Length: 338
Image 1 (cartoon, rainbow, N blue to C red):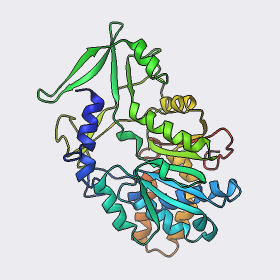
Image 2 (image 1 turned 180 degrees about the horizontal axis):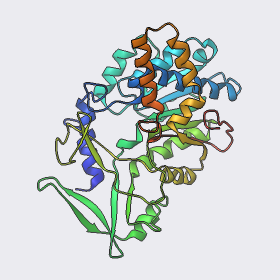
Image 3 (image 1 turned 135 degrees about the horizontal axis):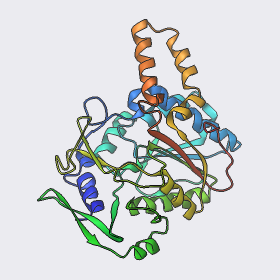
Image 4 (image 1 turned 90 degrees about the vertical axis):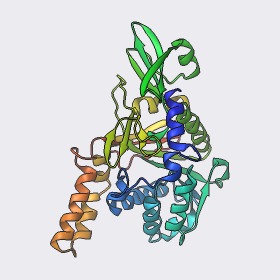
């Protein structure tokens, strides 16, 4: 089967898909996301959201849509923090776009004291400015993999039974015609997600009619030369993608150059791009940590700063994780990026 079908079945099969039955987040899961590391991360995102709302002259209605909310940690803290900003809180409709019924159940339990609406379709969103938040969401979208060998292009396929990759010859011109954002120049290996482009098209439609935007936070790379990034993770360790199928997370590392090309095709503009570490520092994470730590004992203070270090240090998540802000062409907003 093709790589994208393999990923989809492994992750989202209704009966055996990883995200349909597992709670992969946190110390006892398979990986940890930024909201799991420190609530300050989500507080900073909340402040950024409110800053965006203020810059748009405090519209009466704004829709905040988190894409794939995991265990609900980030949305919980955004809601908990935004209560302190009553004008914003009363203006905001909070949504979660979630594919997994299993994770939806966990999120609803976590957020049962708040007014949040779960949606499967963007047409369920009310009128108003639409702001989409994506944290470690796009990296699990099923991808196609193309490889160039002796000036001929092939699509990679997976033989699960024999645990090996196969390839099938393709006409690269047809691929380029169908997916115009795919750059084949000077490439020997290409990854792209038709499903992600399809979703971005739907998001762009909502953004372009509403003066909205999409904040993307993910581990990513910017190099023009694409590489094979397909990976599987179990118990915080990388394993073969042929092992623990349905019980391990399978993802790829998004190429932000390609995401920006997708955005351009969808009439969106890049309003900001930066590393996660620099974004959080520009948004005042160190000052926030200083305020919180004033009344903490030594051990709790040390733990707080270690968690902050994991988020911003280039040796940890600070450089590998990047932040990209896509908007319609009318928006002028660069807080956190300049």
